Image 1: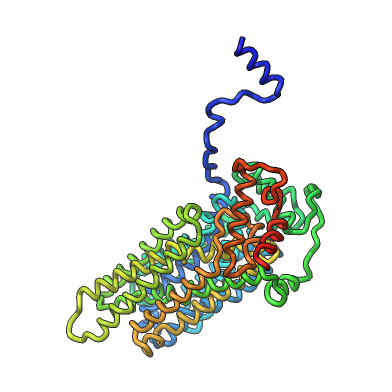
Image 2 (image 1 turned 90 degrees about the horizontal axis):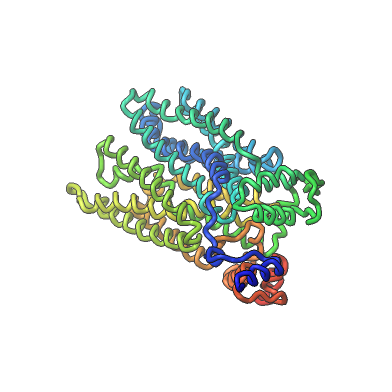
Length: 547
């Protein structure tokens, strides 16, 4: 009788009976395989840059012997690609807004393919420089567009994991470049370095073809007014249909499309040749945009100014200075550097969405400061000791090089690209990321083209002490200015930024809002932290912080 009464009550109330399973905590959503595949295909474009960086470190030894060029010409040849890539990264923002993110990735692969062939068939130094120019443009396109596309296609739950893929493939490319150096080093000098450089054209073909299987970025589709196509992509790349609807609503709001517009094709107000974007970014930025730009530029500057390209590009010279003179052993040591870099970047990809950006970044940079200082100490001791080798100092130098690239790869390497690709507002994202890439390439180019001259002027140990000091300044900047962005939607970033060093209060209020939305036992409809949207939270934070 009691059972029948309970059934009747359930029918009357219109609510199904609950079981024990209904009270279990919600399970973690499975990783979206379609978004995972898209991120891999887009990020593989970055392997082109990695291969060029890795292969040039060894190829430069044989180019110098074959073409009889000086140290200054070698450092210019190695570093100039970074400055050439500025052309590609500057053009990539406008190109990707014009033809779409997907076809921009195809274009990047095609340009690099042509550059690799030109370098492989170069008869002299001038022709080789022209090949570097063409390849550099392709690298600039790839560097800008891969993280942008990946961030725009990724669900928030795994955005850190997926947007770290470009750095993963840069490291994989560096490792392949080192292996190519070792493999082709046994060939005649005039043939070996040409094959090392020319082989880079092979992956570019497969990458350009593979990218055609990817969907277009849903955010770019919305900017074109193609809501129907964007909805289909979001349904495939989101963890649930509810998340897909929320993401579409956020993107529509950011693109200026009214919420009630749900047609497959809608009209979107076009910006005047991108001039408004540059005004909002550089001339008349809001406090939030100014803060975002400072963080993005600071990340890219300190990533390169702390010496990573000096270690990767000139690792054979560093090992020779450390006392390892055998050519085969030097190349094997560089392969070890590439292997360690690749392994630790893979570790970082699985930790980004679990530990957050700030803890990994601060740990990474602190480790870089210590290892750079110890590397500088070891090289200084070896430099001042002229009678035989000091074995413990040689081991210290080799260990610190490997430890340095490991610390770089668990934080500074991937987080620079993840963070800078997710913090810009939709309308400013492509151009904002291109500014970050431009800073990255300028600093990398200057460092690469002056490292030999630098260590000749202040000793090689002094050069690494300088890099350690720059990394220490970077740690202070990151600790003070960078908010945690883990779990935030891309359209929510402007709420978090704009407070500069006082961002922590905004972060606390956003956490309260999130707890309210998910239900924390305080489901009061009058609670403003539950009812407020992005604009409401921004106003509340402004009132609380005085901004």
